[in-house]
Image 1: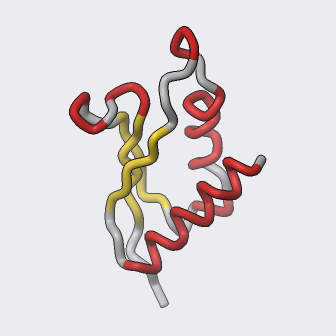
Image 2: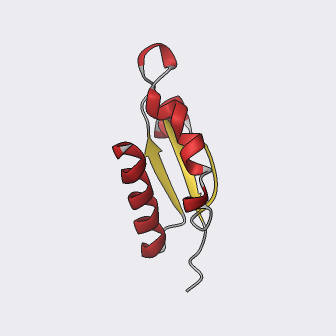
Length: 78
């Protein structure tokens, strides 16, 4: 739960700064089944982040590959 809350704060803060893309590092976990890696898609789809997230994709190998995601942020509509 603390990881989820930290993610939400991070993404909202990045959007307020005007960032358009961030990298979220989840790590791969043991045998490819890390909890953060598994839960991230669920968290990004939550209602609380609908005004923040435009989409996401697995990062390129040079940016962390299977242990990281690009998260694309919406522009703020103030």
